[in-house]
Image 1: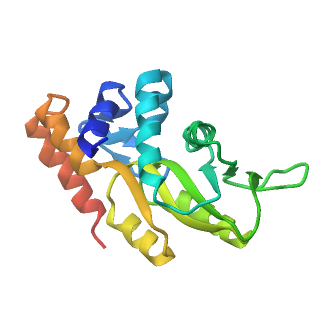
Image 2: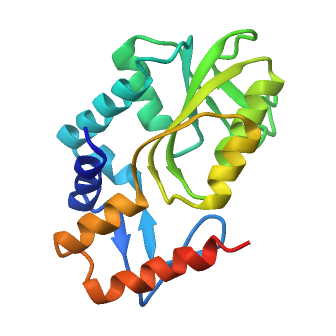
Image 3: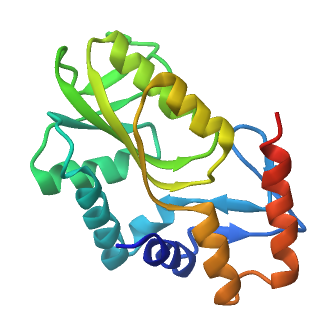
Amino acid sequence: MTKTALARLLLETKAVFLSPDQPFTWASGIQSPIYCDNRRVLAFPEQRRQVRDALVAHIQSLDYDAIMGTATAGIPMASILADHLNKPLGYVRSSQKKHGRSQQIEGYQIPNTKVVVIEDLISTGGSVLEAVHILRQAGIEVVGVVAIFTYQLKRAEQAFAAANVPLYTLSDRETLLRLAVEEGYLAQSDLSQVQHFFQELDKP
């Protein structure tokens, strides 16, 4: 699946919302004219299968023992992928449990093995890189992070490079905005406003 085809899938399933005049609040607190909620794809069996197959294509060249998801948005697709590929599955909590064994890694957690981490979305990259750090502390090697969509923020690219973590994404902001204008999801007059937002966000 091409980046354009994946962007179209996100637009058609309304997984992406564009609202230049009434911005959305990201989990990081950033006010943005675009919001991506890839969990909406789960409600559409055919599109869900297409995303799964695109993820399969991206990780087939990687050497890994198991698939890990990030809590909570990365868990559904990681589960679907692991089941399809008959691979062990685990996920990383955003914080330790307050009861039981107080684990932060659930499911697969074998040291000296390799995993691929599935994430739904990359904004600043902070949450998934924290998951990578937790896995590394447990002696697990992360061979790559694969996400459905990225906002293409420079701070995220720099953070992944600094952490020495390969990042693979099915589609990205530039592809989606171009398609959104071409197919009438976003007015041409609003495009510059959205682009300006990201230019400001990327300033040091």
